[in-house]
Image 1: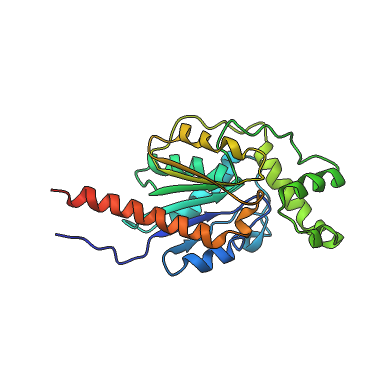
Image 2 (image 1 turned 180 degrees about the vertical axis):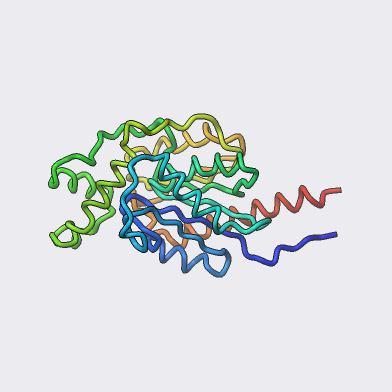
Length: 248
């Protein structure tokens, strides 16, 4: 007897450093007819502006996990997507969700080559001018924003907190492998783009990697394409599940 799932699959969008739950609006517009969109948000921004920033990776993972578990729907398949900081945290979240018996169908990291590759010097404690010079290299803030001191005043504490979270010496290095398939994407102009195949070292399932035109924030020019990758990943996972369930 065939079983049907009445609910759309879920997707969790994990924001990048300096981002919030609204960071992926164009992507959400492309996905909302297909997925139930979930946008967990770390403290110190958006609807959680009054809450203090978190200080290390472990507390950030724990905070996001609470939000994910609150919104997970039983027996509904889901995907975890994360860009940059979201990809770093998302990998650990996948592992924990697997250990809890609720593995995602796919993990889709963008803007990050996987663990043990990036060797950037810490920037969260740099003087203001040097700090924003490093942020500017990533392409996350437009030239217009960079020229308006009031906007820099707004973004500076948030960006410093998020980079500090990732740079904290208390952070544990990810070891082991997840059992979830990975589809990784990076921009051609990113410093570590050619290391993207590193992701295959962190999953026992399939791993696909792609490099597209653009810098660290290539997603701003490729939301339509990224949405198609995500939809195709869920279609592939669903087809595999159906073949497994109904194969004679």
